[in-house]
Length: 143
Image (cartoon, rainbow, N blue to C red; front, side):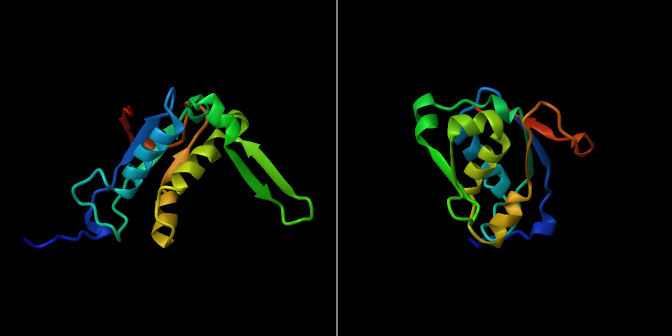
């Protein structure tokens, strides 16, 4: 049997809407990464961009285990002396939940130019509204 590889211009790409209300961050990120990569399609090709565009709303309503949220720390350095800043997941969920979800999904995609292209198809919003009504996104239930 011959293996079929699909080209990105031959695969139909859709827009997917995901509501993050009450979802665990890690489990939600796995579903998003699989949709972005195209692993949920029979046309999946590892070296081509065949995934869909994903719009995530209500990212501020995700849930995190309180103990893990206090232990897990993200660091950021301004490249100035003494410029190391640290933030735990609980604080990040309150202030920058869209960045938190993007950061977790980024760890699940390839670390190359294909991964950068995949991440450009992810849009995360903290509230329930988004500016992508014209693309008619299909709502996907998670979990």
